[in-house]
Length: 159
Ligand code: COA
Image (cartoon, rainbow, N blue to C red):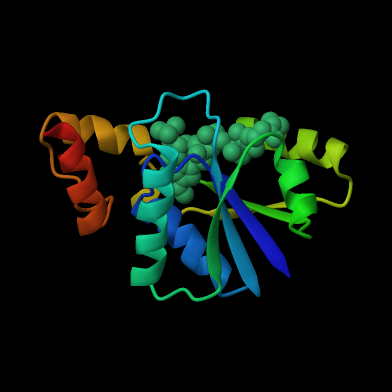
């Protein structure tokens, strides 16, 4: 069974990696789908976001996880990749409303598609990529939230 984990990953955090690692143990293959046309203005280019993710996945030793970019509808990407399972992480109740809306829309567009939610680990339940970037912009310590490599990549952007 192939499962898709979509997002903008600008950049990937330990919270995302926790979800990826856990889901990789339950499914044959995980495709981390990196959003091409995010409405968000990203710090990292698409290529950089992909490369950083690939390095993280390698360092976690997850051999059944692939990174692919996607544009357009998530349901079309899922169909093209013979998958009918999307995974999302739930950090707090505030994520729920938004996630429920996306899950319902995706299920309307592709009936067989199931969205499964993993509860984020408590220590990552209050972080997001934006929060990490904001702390870094004030030279705060982000080492609990991202890997050394991601920290380095963020610092490079600040130079
Ligand atoms: N740990 C840490 N952070 C997490 C997290 C976790 N477990 N789960 C989510 N986040 C954070 C992300 O870092 C991100 O933070 P940011 O806003 O500061 O960048 C935020 O939560 C949510 O972003 P993300 O998971 O990247 O999702 P998104 O809201 O940008 O995009 C998609 C969601 C990709 C699923 C959705 O936009 C999509 O499918 N788009 C394609 C178009 C489509 O099909 N539309 C129809 C359905 S609406």
